[in-house]
Length: 159
Length: 89
Image 1 (cartoon, rainbow over the protein chains, first blue to last red):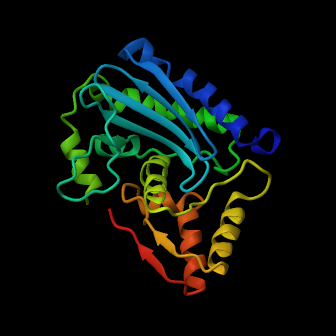
Image 2 (tube, each protein chain N blue to C red):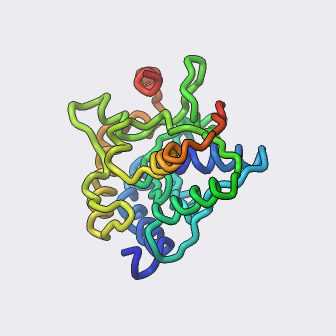
């Protein structure tokens, strides 16, 4: 994929598939696609409703992969990403795989993409569809502003 | 590191202390190799190297399933026994 059109063509494709796979956020949970930020490092697609934000990203450098990060909004805004996990750190965002592993016996990853630096269209479709379904299945409460699970997730992240 | 960490933690800190960081270009070639060449060039130029550490939020398993740019840089630095300054939050 990337060989033909470069990394920005890949990000364009990622955005297209992402908007299709995650359309349920708008249809069922009142989210709006508020922005797509693309640069050489990544493509980050952000959805937001009154309580929650979702960032779906494809990273091609540093730690390449497909990532879904769910935020609890603070005063209607996306809070700073807590990069450190000291005991006193308040964490307002969690990755989808952490939620899935807490709520089920299964795990979720982007392992269907054989070469993450050269993902194929079909692989992206499969992974994004899987992430979208998991978000809907395992985090409907968070999507509606119920963050009671966050303290448990915080314990996992701070281990 | 994941995008959140690199853009929200590494780049701002680098700008704060006036340090450079790897800025890939959308050109052909293996991005890992290009990054490796960059870190080796910096050591050849005797530049001071700062280490922001790994993303503490992701697991070793996740790291093992994908290209590890941070690990590659760390290995290149260790191979030359080059000094680094750790940057804590």
